[in-house]
Image (cartoon, rainbow, N blue to C red; front, side, top):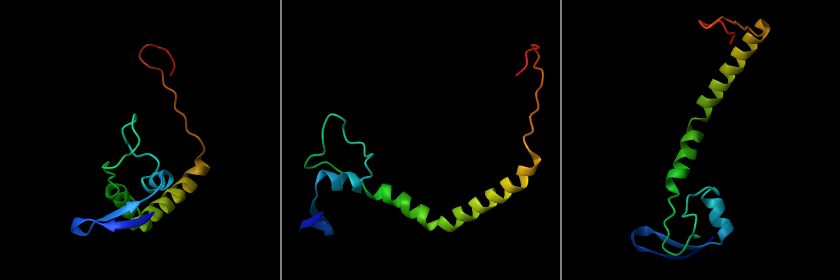
Length: 94
């Protein structure tokens, strides 16, 4: 990607190839399926990256949750599978 100019309000004009654009927007951006991105197409990157930043900020909390789940699974493992079959009202087994 190359910055080729400045726009109004502190914005930038950039040049990038289709591979860079695909990587920047995460390969899954919902452009119109019949058209490729063209001059004037708006690419809203902030919402995508805001989610990533929020996840990064909560990384320690997510790691703590993961460790708690691992401890719980370790405590439940010795119990083995518990299966309770019951007869429904119709008499057929579930």
